[in-house]
Length: 327
Image 1 (cartoon, rainbow, N blue to C red):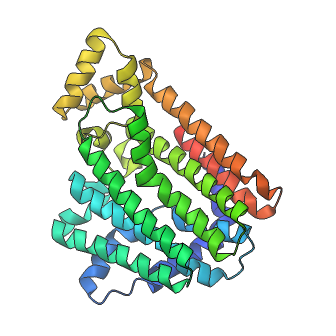
Image 2: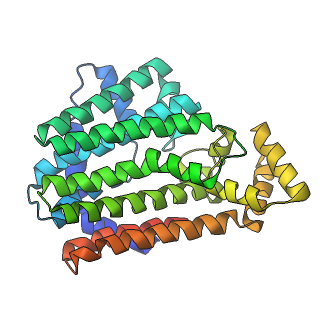
Image 3: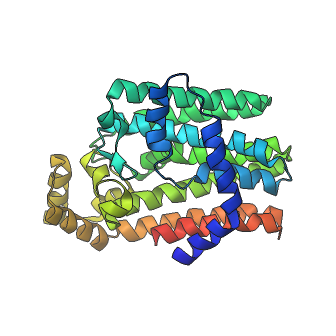
């Protein structure tokens, strides 16, 4: 994973520099407090994957306006940051990217309104493209992501949550933003419908794989690496695929113990370790890795239409990186 990550970073270093500059240049809040709250999350790290996908997709389709593309690409980082700020308030999260969540540093109303500002800024930048298709994509993303969060709320602590419903939640909350970034890259490049659909498919499958990997990491990595408390999803009542699958397969006392722990919503480090061991025993972790692997394979297959173009290599590497996070 480390070698692959370094390979990707080396290939996209100039793109990331453009994105960082564009994030600062396009923020432009009228009040310094908004800048502080937005910057607390925006400049606390992050992979910048969503804007990077837009840049790489545009380049693959022949777009050569690098600085303009970077301005449009930050739409997706602003959108992502807005949803994270809102999600942290809704979930009562304590940490984000290794820092106190914004609503703890300031207060929930300030955090929510700053998220609203970032959402509005992303829409303003979409208008600058002059393309109604782009504006439609961004509007559709905001609708889907909001509905995904509402669906997740309705299933909070729901031990009967099915895999199908979980997949719909992560499609709305995560995959649509990856899809949109890739499709907008194709749109601003004037790509054919066939190429637009190929990149849309790539983004969808990549987004699904990334979210499954994130859901796995909540049970397989330490808090210092995650940037948030290990087991945070379960403490917040979010049942993800590793848990759903393990509950489906578990029997007898093991299932009863897991169910009681999840319902309680609070557990010690030892109890959490025991839960992870049971999830592994009943196949929840391996099954999630398998499903993530399937999405990565489909993402790479979607790129085959572009042949051996040099600019397709980073997108293939990013798909492999998604798998390496889950493995």
